[in-house]
Length: 340
Image (cartoon, rainbow, N blue to C red):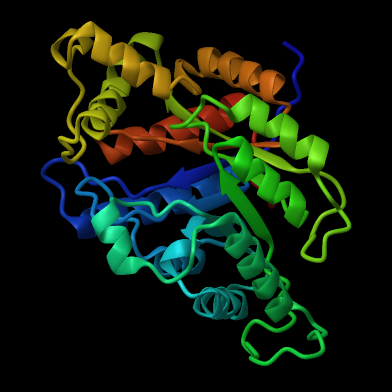
């Protein structure tokens, strides 16, 4: 195929494997961030999840600060901050501070989902998840980052003033795409676990994008598509490693969550109909040898017209995740001297 090789980024949920402590999982995440920086990936984003036994990405801004302090070139950010869990002023003060620490390497991705179960969401809830409230919060956050503060601004955020923190809207549906378009902001689609509307959402975003919006930071649509990726020396080895992700997502579907499990034969994981359900939810994926994965990612880029791909990688052994990123960086032709 002749599809251009768009920038590649990494989305890290800080997975915790069976037998691994939370501290070890965070250390492994930082090792991966350093590797992504060295290999030429454009961004390293942290998600926000709560009350999840297999993930340690709950204090997103702290993970960003740590990763940014250990890297030199790569952009580091949130993929994303779930705004219903936070006061907008607190978010923009945190990210303004991150910019003061690390300069123009910080991204602020924002979503409307709680990133957790209903009970935990109630304990975290600070902001309405309604579309109008989401738009109003982002517009207010944009105002706090401007070099020239709007007249009538009753509350200031001096640490964020003038930082113009780059913002992205995260979503998986047409509704999320519409919000990103109205705001005039880049759109990152969560197709790695919710692929059922992603093509329609991308079309709506491009068609309705408004560069004249007060909150706009870009002059034309910009899209990022999320995909699950497992790269190994052979297709067979990669398919074996992929069973760790299958087991994890099976726990999401059945409600029987556990830490990441070692690879096992697919036939031993679950009945065929459940595995089909898992693979359907994970359909935006690339699994195989470097050549196989490059071909699969090129197809994803061609079908979505993505400006950038952001990749999730779940491996029981963190060394396999590092190797996966190394193999893909070489096969994709990443340039370590390029910043996102």
